[in-house]
Length: 328
Image (cartoon, rainbow, N blue to C red; front, top):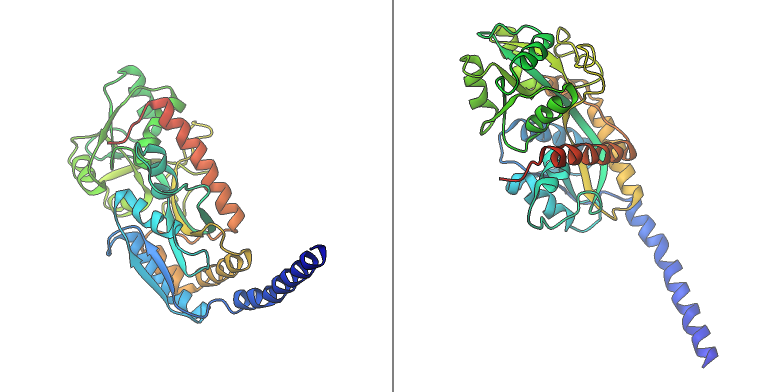
């Protein structure tokens, strides 16, 4: 009996050792077939356009076609669920955004089918954009100091528009309220465009929105950029100070998108994808094309992107709990 067990164990060990070179070889050959890159939005939006631009250059870098597959729904969580359940082989990737890795899961009241911190493997950040507080030209607000002064003079009367309930712009407004110790009215809209119509029309004096959405409105003079939610000023709008410069220490609020793979994807494949994305995003013409979309390439290591996701998960989770924000 003991002899048979030893024989079986030796055979199993030989099989495992024999399979190891084959597995390593398969990973070394990655990729050897087309890769699917899931976009959790309908075709034609800013993120979709950016992913398609990147995918073309990435295909050249990897030597295999990178196929964009749009899977919108459930506030970007349908696409994330699809990728989380895909084989962990590097051939199905996710456009990871704040909505499907942070805010959506935090606000969900029913099971979403995946754990954003456990079921997805960060590959790299692609770009991040700060939230920005803007004032209507028709208001006479010209600085962040004006906002604070008026909010404290008339608590609960000043309105700030967001592009939707539970969105990063809404959460940034709640963070602003608690950080600055002010009481303002949050006015949610169904998207940035209708909110901008009312802001530019002077019906709402302020809006919290992502920077790229207001590059043209600031240039035309329809709105005034008051403060940016990042540590440094943006080269896209160098005239707009940060919240820190404006006297609100520690206030940061950004949206971002990057790439994630199913959890369990071999480290060698994650590193291969990360290197390919870094080389892709270093391409001059691609950088210019992304800048036209208001996106500055900011690739990171997988570890850095993972740390960003965990930090935002904890930060916005605390805001959601403190402000008692629930899903609608």
